[in-house]
Length: 132
View 1 (cartoon, one colour):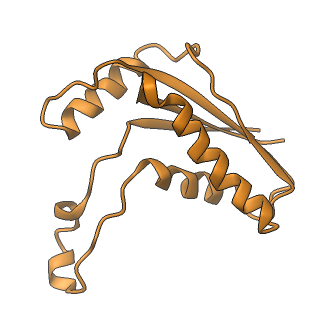
View 2 (cartoon, one colour; view 1 turned 90 degrees about the vertical axis):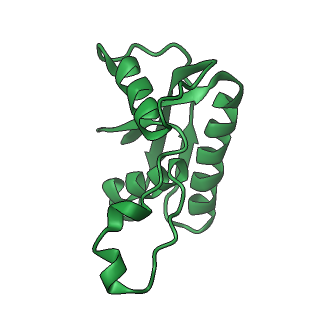
């Protein structure tokens, strides 16, 4: 059973809410028949690769004008997926969109040449790993 594992720098008070958002999304996919089952866990104080927490904090500062995300920790969200009808990589990318706001893009192709002007920072910095 593959596991999609997100490590997310999130405010402590919102860690369970992030788990709930992931669980709601996969529950909808189960109801739609896209997979047999999926379960999202919340792991507090996960063993992280060296420097990952610092890297996620720096990403937040870089994307938020030097501000720190106070009262936040890195939480792990392993999502165990069973009987997926489709690509695990595609599912991981769909779930990652839950952590990144939708950008409104102009219809003008000339304006889109500078697409970085329309990028929005992630709600919370994250990393993703797929375990098989």
